[in-house]
Image (cartoon, rainbow, N blue to C red; front, side, top):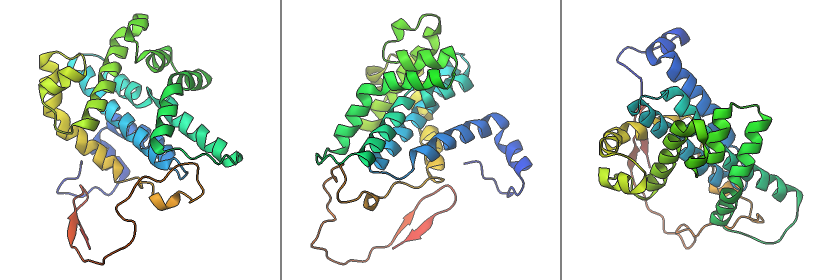
Length: 255
């Protein structure tokens, strides 16, 4: 995203070009992302949760900037507000590894189960990690902002971003009206968010390039996670197609 005509060959020059605060944001996102893309039977569910968290963080930052609130603080709150989902998913995988239950559930069922417990697990994790009262309030109250007390302004931002992410999962190119139906936004805010969505998408894509999407083949056949239906099942017919994968680091020819 930050590449220019003149290449950057030193860490100092890179930080100067990107900015220290942006380096910190990228480092935090990648540290969470590194945990999110580890292998496991629910790797794809965990990866999806991380992408949604990254998208929420970028939406929070943009909304906070518009509302003249601390944008850097909002970014962290957005990135970590649903962290309980990642912890729950990893907990499920740990239980799978230690038990021999023959029941098989779909990825959607596992994701729904994580959603049901993510608030309680997220808050417990935040308290054990000694996170700030603001972050604890965001994690506990982003579905019920009216309970957040003195942290209401930040929790409102995270709650709105959470709804925006849900809307973007269904409609990647929404209008301002679409966003206003999905989240409590004023007209000016919705129009502003529509205008920056391409930048948000580019940021998510750029960080995606540094992580490996979990492979379907990594899920063992005896897993308690049902494989999703696939059009790649046999019989197969060989064909040759040429294409190009578009990336910020340069297009990659594919066959």
